[in-house]
Image 1 (cartoon, rainbow, N blue to C red):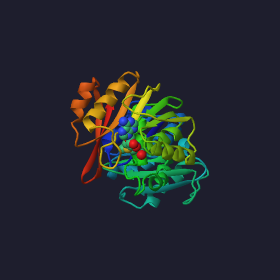
Image 2 (image 1 turned 90 degrees about the vertical axis):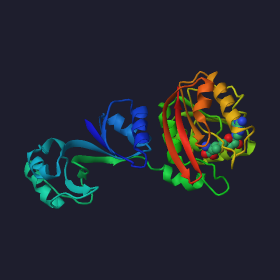
Image 3 (image 1 turned 120 degrees about the vertical axis):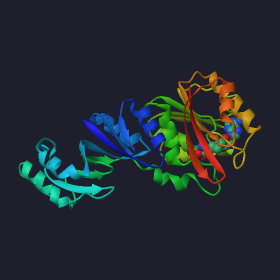
Image 4 (image 1 turned 90 degrees about the horizontal axis):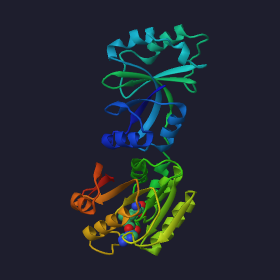
Length: 319
Ligand SMILES: C[S@@+](CC[C@H](N)C(=O)[O-])C[C@H]1O[C@@H](n2cnc3c(N)ncnc32)[C@H](O)[C@@H]1O
């Protein structure tokens, strides 16, 4: 079936890249509406994994606002109809109220029943430059919202936003049961998101206190298959498929050497691990392109993440 995703408008470039890395398929997108062919298992995967998509629909058709009435009348509703229905316009307005369009569905199906609360066939009129018509299939997993306050406290301001952590893990393209390592794991934000999506995780941090905190967070969130070690990211020897990490930037987090040198030594070290991909968050004030080049990596994609007025992070996907 064709599936329509409503993406978060926060960062569309990141939303498209995350979709590509996780779903590994072609799509067409216009602003925050993305359409792709997906089977049921793929829709299940998208709902569990995508941090920058909000909801998913079975896509029926798109049309100009003025054409909606004619298209609703023309459409063969019976094959997509199940038990009862409702019609709702979102993102904007249709020319007529929703009930006016409902009559076309009513006339085309056997035993029509309107149920505004718990309809089995929730028809949505998604109003954008065009109108996209789809049947609601569900929201993506937003449980990361509940982890936000718990992970990021006044005591540990460097803890990563769980939504970004989830997207960074997704940008690696890792699948369930593959191994992701965060060599600067801090409070374990990236490891928790990866673990909850079914990956095996390995974390290291130079600070035993941070390893303690990561342990507590992984246990509290009931993540499975994790391993933590106190280690130096510039020297550790770790066997994994991918690296996803948020580098220390020397203001609030402990750093062992000057950031430029630390980042270069870290990249040179993980080069020996023979990983498939690394997703690294650099502080924006560093000449990260030069460091990456000197370490012999290539930038596949990069994104900007605004943290606060004096810090922007560069999220870089490395080959
Ligand atoms: C920006 S924080 C990571 C934040 C993490 N993503 C979180 O959610 O808490 C960076 C971490 O790097 C650790 N660190 C600094 N130098 C290190 C090194 N050479 N090897 C390993 N860890 C190091 C610090 O102790 C700190 O916990």
